[in-house]
Length: 360
Image (cartoon, rainbow, N blue to C red; front, top):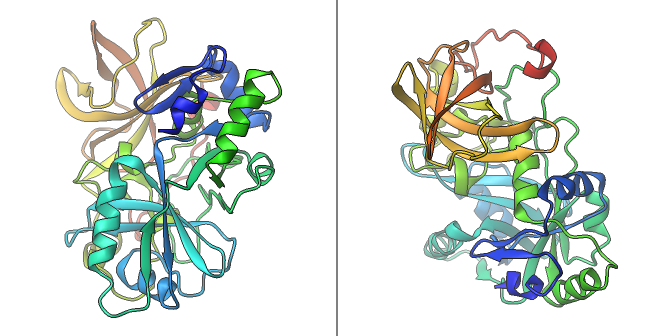
């Protein structure tokens, strides 16, 4: 576990997920966003796929068009079940010889097993290389300075070729997002820890990373994919799905929901009542008039917006409904901001809306 490398850094709080923070998560967010700090991401695992057929093979079994992926260009893919639900997600970058996949730790073993079973007779070789490589996140400039094997530049929230964006808010809260993840030799972690211990490097923990992600409405498999999640429900068509490519498992559902219907649930952003010191936990109930209508998927305390969360709720929940969220000592009020509209789909006519903070 690479987090143990940072346990001796002054102020470091380390848990089973990794480096949580170094005493001031709010300040760490600002430094991370400004490019003055980097974040060791111990909850990421690195897989690689070598072989001449790697890109066409991944193209054929996932949601993304990858056959013509240019070396160094970051994208992402989803592995769906036959009903179109998200099983796995991976950040993708190719170096011209190998395709690198950055995967949430809790999904990595399952994805590698599935990829291995899907090789057939093709010239592909999926491997877990996390014993040799780790992931460090930050701005593109900060990631580029780490001497990485590859750097994945997050395409979110820009709608890729073949993608489709459902969020109607203008500007999108992630429009200025500058995020990249560097795949580095594990020795780099030792260097970062030593530099941080003597004050020569600034680090941030995963609490800061989460806060910036939640504020940008950025879905993540370990948080927003609960086994029933369709990519439409969390606005993942914009960066992880190519709607015009060839067949893959789950494609029929993806096309049907987008072209003919609406996703049964929808992602919302919640501005939480900040008067309560305790934040809700992932999985906490979201309620309308005392009735459960959804659940929290991610939660954070943002350096500008305060307590915020992402939640998946029923499509039938009115967009202007006053919601509450379960916390350990009761409930807190939650102001809803629409991420995926109830009528999301190709045929929807969606007005462009200002940010909730601007409307206030």
